[in-house]
Length: 558
Image (cartoon, rainbow, N blue to C red):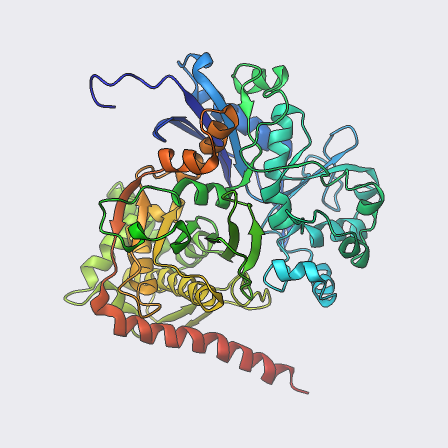
């Protein structure tokens, strides 16, 4: 803060629950992070494709990080609290106690994580119904949504879980309930993951058709029959018990929550771009695509009117920015895939030793190593004969095919550090090519996108950012697709704080808070001279999945 400026008197706390940790930030009215803390949370994988967490463990971590970020602050100056989280499924009994989501009967593990793929049979049956609600999820429901997981619980854990259940929460809604005692759900969670319609509400015929008529019978009390827009103030604010847990004062405004990716979108997409030479400066906010990239990646595009994009979730009305329709593309594994490829390579131990010796992260070391071995050519050209198809956990968008597998072509006997660095590069490029694939599907359906706004853990990696600028920048016949990075790296936490600011009444609308609390930091422009090379890489990328389908047809041919 510059000297002589009066210290802002109003602060907001944003809490973000990710896949492996809980993070919190204290944010001022200008969107500046004043304090940050994080705390790991436990994950269990009792069997392949089963991923579980504990809501008690998650809440305890929320309390630890919130207490840390408000240390030394006059608590009367904290005006609002906002939560975002992964779209995991929390199961509680009628007295709000945890219920097991596993065969072992361990009630401590009462959360089915977002990336859990146990309900493949159930989602296939749901998609076979061709019910009209499916048109709002790209035509095909994902196994990562809540309906198939609920059906799995009914069919597999009837006695120890389903029959005793009183409440099924999306994790963001669990957190706002825990803070306020209010069971109202966020429109964001219900619209995006539960088939709720902002205009029509629940569709009884859908739940009856898939075998979950139980919800209709009790007027949806277990999954939410009071729905509020993100940023709306909940009840009487923070309860005395939650205030003690979090180290805050009772009665502080608590906002209806957002899914984590949507909070990231909120934290970046409304930034004031004047003075940065960006084409989107003179364009509506609908020309911007927010890409939230961490363990997985989400591609958030908004429109004034509904746009139906095959294989892309939505359109969802007011699910992120009030008054706008949202389409959400995605890649199920991105950061997790990069880790998988790098850590599984024979040269990984050598990489760890060398990175540690230089006091660098393994990815900073790999980026500098690529610069060493590229010689006179652009770094991206090192993968001229190495190509990756990145769907190691199925394709979320735009093919919506969870049976797809990862592919690598161009491997050699070499297993040295050069080989690892180039495989890492090819994986990063594959993720960027997947983003290009999603953008082209969105453009073909009616979106008009000119600028990418990146946030999340992977946006801190300069190679990841540059590859997205280079590869998506030539997706169409446009002058380039620049990538905008926020002034505050932790855009998801800014988005969560925006919710708290709205709930406090300090801003008239979510849009006003977005504009004042999100700012442009750095702009990365594409290297347009590399267009021809990446056009060829993209042709190979599309051939890979085409060939994978051909191989499957051959093997399935009687």
